[in-house]
Amino acid sequence: MGKKTSEKRGKPFGVLNILDLIILLFLLSLGAALAFRGNVKDQLGSTADDVTVEFSVRIEPVRVMTYMAVEEGDPLFDNETGTRIGTVTRVSATPYMREVTLADGSIVTSPDPEYFTLIVVAQGPGKTSEIGVLLDGSRLCSPGGTIKLASTRLDTTGTFDTVEVVS
Image 1: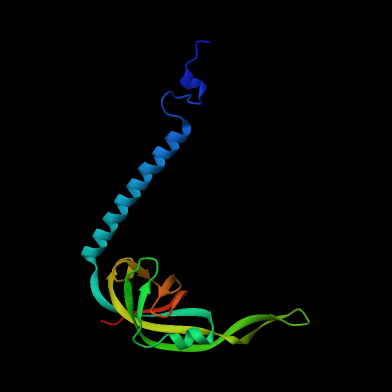
Image 2 (image 1 turned 120 degrees about the vertical axis):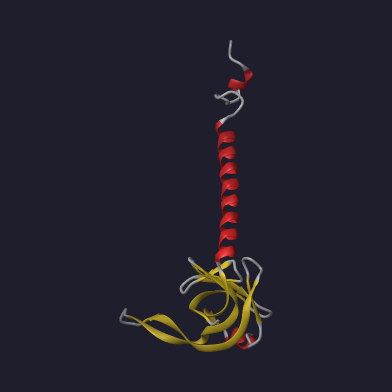
């Protein structure tokens, strides 16, 4: 009968319960992560050199309409950050190769008549630093990395094929 009402409500530590402690730790770690992220961006911005970057992005599989919609001169945007990362300089397409299972159970690759592999080559402003090439100073651009692209007539996800510093 001598127990307090706060102990009866599941607060064995007095004022704070375990859920309060977890939320407090989460908020503190989130604040530390945001402070560290801002510090890294400031450091990279001051040590990076401004350059022009030519990069190619592989988009597959795409239909004919998507291939016909992308044109030279179209602006490209990073869909995750909303920043403009460059301008399309060249577009090429090859048949999309799909794995097909044959009657004997073997698997072969065969061109799919409905789809293409699209290679979009673009140029844009960037920065070089110790960690690599950054498009528009904020997007790490390395072969094999993925990016969500958008333009006036395109909204898709692609993979960086090549990255080259032009000047």
